[in-house]
Length: 152
Image 1 (cartoon, helix red, strand yellow):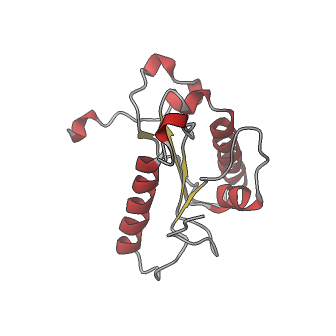
Image 2 (cartoon, one colour):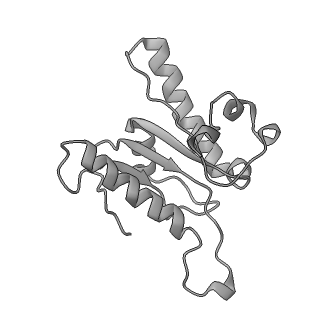
């Protein structure tokens, strides 16, 4: 697996997205290549903003888990330790069982941190990847501000 960010320590962010299935006519083309590019760009930007050495685990993305496959230890550990959860909103995201599991696991961690008063709670920072009408958002997602129309 390509891994520009490493995973020896807790990542700054966990990028959660709905995997796009490959189509036979695309050959070897990665249908999620733009998600991967966004991830690499975010890792590069965070490395510039921090004093982390090259190869530090500034981000986590799961590019290997498929529908029906069990969670592996790295994914579970990243959800348990990341500082920020970044869901990429799209209609496919909100239909994905795996994405729902990731969000739920992170939300449970947030609730536990809040209940135990561990100080600052790791936030969920959504990114609008593909337009989703607000009426189509699940209640949990609708409660978060995601509309950045003021950005132009």
